[in-house]
Amino acid sequence: MSHWITDTRASKRFPVYTRSNASDVLPDPISPLGASLAFIPGTMEGWRDGNVRNGSVLEGEVHAEGFNPVCGFFNGFFYVNASVVRLFGVRAGVGAEPIDLAFFGTRPDTPPYVPHPDDPNETVAKQLTDRANWALTISEYPELEESKRVAKEIRAKRPNLAEATDAALIEYARALIPVHRRMFDDHVMTSTNTATGPTVLGQIVPDLLVRIIAGAGDVDSAAPSHAMWALSRLPQNSPEFQQGFEDFLYEFGSRGPNEWDLYSDVWETKPALALALIDAMRQVGPDGDPAKAAARTVADSAAALATALERVKGNDEATTMVNLAAASGRRFNAWRERSKTNCIRVMNEARVAMRELGRRHAATGALAHERQVFMLLNDELDAFIADPKSFTAKLAERETQWRSLWELETPYFVEGDKRVPEVEDLPKRTEVKVDRAQKGDVLQGNAGCSGVARGRARVILDPADPSALEEGDILIAPNTDPSWTPLFIPAGGVVVDVGALNSHSIIVSRELGIPCVVSVVNATRRIPDGATIEVNGDLGTVTILES
Picture (tube, one colour):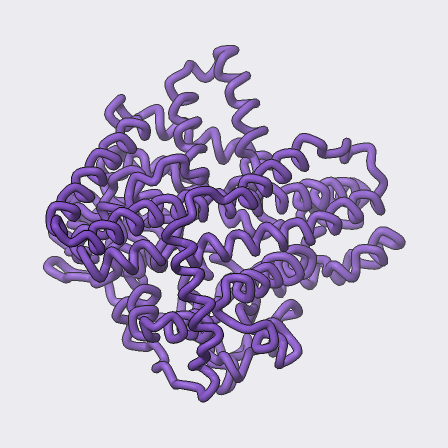
């Protein structure tokens, strides 16, 4: 098994790929059906569409090699193309170095930027200038609201899957992918332009940047936490709780750990995941109310903006830019999470259709369990429903191979103009030696949300088991997505192995006013569980006080 069955090609024109931000999207190897049905034709093509629409690349550039270069899969793991992101920085006039700093911090293994003759492009530079002006001045995003309406309507009109034929289930799932692709185009637009406001503020008031753009409000990925908090205040066996939880699953059931892979359980398919998080919130006192935390963040953001405006008082141009940049940064933070929520809602419809297909054929014995259906490739689905038992042995073997990928230590960077590592090249995670941090050690990461917090480190590897986290503890996580957000409520601070500018953990920490540091390499393996640590969200450091 030199390469995995869903692996893609690596670009030579845009050679550097990274797990930064990619591990926020897919921390684990993606399932074969998740990749071939949804991610490659939907998410990845939408990613390419969004880069072209945003103006950072020309359509011919990202089609010239005959495959999609903007992201890829290597040995089952998802990577974002760092060269394309660097190109955005170069053509926008800020250069590759600030992009590297935002995405990778001070990682010593970051491949150097190697200029390409086609990198400078006056046409694209003009497009990006126009796009930056758009991002600073736009106040409404009607296309995004239309996508939200469509996503909710698709959920509301879900057919009776239990009565659908096998062929109808497949047709339903496949029909959703073009919709998802279009919505991910929106997500690229919002994600890319989230950086515009902060870039301007960083040039004028860098020390106030993080505080100013916090408190966006109306952040869709934070909404489940507010709903869970309200449910945690109700007796679990009460009729009010039962009805409220049913409503919660309808509205937020598409969210869950590793939600971008169709294979993964989400709150709808495994409600116990959500119930465990609600139970953990029951242990938190009234001061943990996320609405109160959000109000404190909004107040601090307003104070920081007032300080910034006082500094530039008398300079009309700087005053205008600070106001525009602050408003833009907040709006795009919220819009980024909305666009992601729209995508996830639509993808979940494909998930539940395929789960129904899996349930049926697990009952007949063709599959060992219902989620084994996700070991199929999209182009095998029709043959599978024609003769399910002919796939039994193949899918069992494929699942074993897929599970073996989870044990691998995947490289943070892959370079397409060099030899791409094969499965056999990668060590197992258990074979990789990581030095434990000792008392007095200072671990460097990227500043996520300002403030300083001291507390007990709690290393949590799975949001499905939040019981170890107590109020005031520092959450140490490998990565976060919306399924982790409820764990932010009791946490005094957040530290994440990976993450970059405007990753999920940063946006939610800013909303709740929690000190946050991301891209602390191997934090979950280096920081001893139970150690007393200090998180400095201004400096991007984690200090071991007592180990």
